Image (cartoon, rainbow, N blue to C red):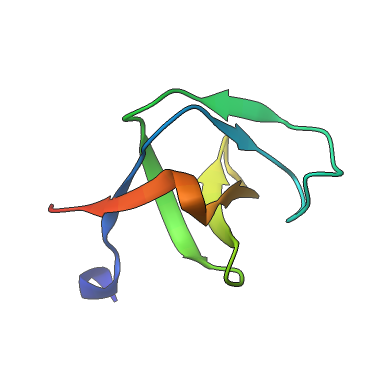
Length: 68
């Protein structure tokens, strides 16, 4: 539901990865204060976002919820 979707932004430069692991090559980099299309938490460390039309992973340490 739309009410479950919160706006998220990066807090710092963050690597975007195809898998929830720092062992995978990054597929992109987001600058600080970039709006991200947050989809869900993957686990305690990783969040799933939409990146260039595909699901990708970013560290939860570098995103924050902001008011709509």
